[in-house]
Image (cartoon, rainbow, N blue to C red; front, top):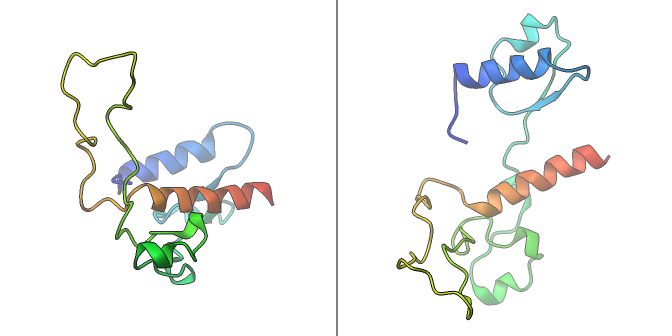
Length: 126
């Protein structure tokens, strides 16, 4: 998510050169790979497709939207993570935070990644 530039270019080239199968590279950083592979690389971009998903505005309206498409706009349920699942048989030795510290404001949240993953799954299952 945060990798850009030469790191991604190296990753793409490594994927093309390794193994017996030509990979399908689905990211927005194509660099010069098409020219360097004489147009034989299989490149694509999943995009955001946000316009095809109805926005979720409140809890009542969310019930009318399929679960997989709810809150993709990040207004609520941006993250679905906790540091500790309460258990009756174990008491943690240290105080647990309510949420992991890495839930930063610029990150799109888990629903964005879930949506991207489902699009990749559709490509692979087709």
